[in-house]
Image 1 (cartoon, rainbow, N blue to C red):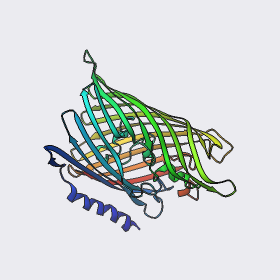
Image 2: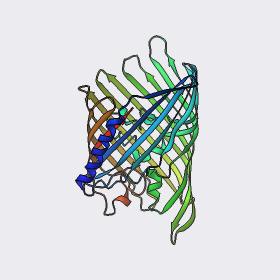
Image 3: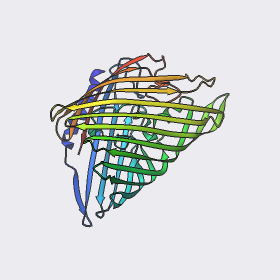
Image 4: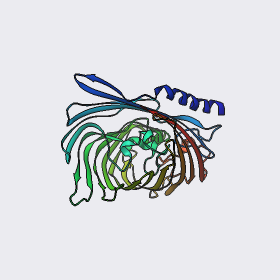
Length: 402
């Protein structure tokens, strides 16, 4: 078993080597098109509890942890730019190798302080929501799961609609304000964490999404390297599908939100080779489920602090502490009233060259959230014998980009 899992990781390293290429440029109609690509292959082993829909605690762990993407962009004029990206992943039972249009938009900059873009657009939310897929940009193999849960990627990643954005340089050397305001439609994949959770009901979602609007404001302060900001996102979400619970409900299924919003505050300080980050998020969801039969309110809060230091050109060391908590008021149902996941993490990143990196990461987790009621990494269906209160995880990830 060890040989098979590690063999897949080694193959990923060998396959990455010949793809360590520069961004590919070509000209068409006198315009320069630029092509980029990236991919990563991971391996996770846990001593207790299966994690992120993978059989991580069975035998030698799991290497079902792959993502990949490719994008193309072109400056049509000095102010008008267009581009698109294809993205796919296989994370245990999520993604299932189904590539999707990750983003595709055109933007026009009238002035530095006013620009617009339209299409399918990455949502501005916190420090890393719009770049969380670009693994080669980050120190960590897994971003703090209290803020950027990888099994809920679809819930915040993008909207189809329009943005207005810009940078406002403040007088008297007070720094720069950058703003984004957006409105659009969110549409989740059928292969995400929430549809996977509902399958154990059993509920099969055929669509899940709705109106999404909000904004982000960040201030690059006069203190060099210090950035602070805040984001707000509001949603009106509807899910439809089928339900098959003999003796309770069979046939069409519907759920919808009464209220659905996210507040997020963040800060970042970069000086020399040191980077310090911190974010806090509160997500509130009030929804009608089981065709309006039940009303469920979910209060999710997350916070982390992280630090990383680049000792050499090829080695970076990072660590973070992430706290996740969830409260679901008791409804006389099997839902537990509350839960948490506290995660201590240490990571070593090794840059073999400009295009290939290896990340070795340890997670030391206390708690497992509320399995069966909300997707938070640990799923009751993946742990039929029950969940233990603590989980240690070893993560190895190989990534390349060009």
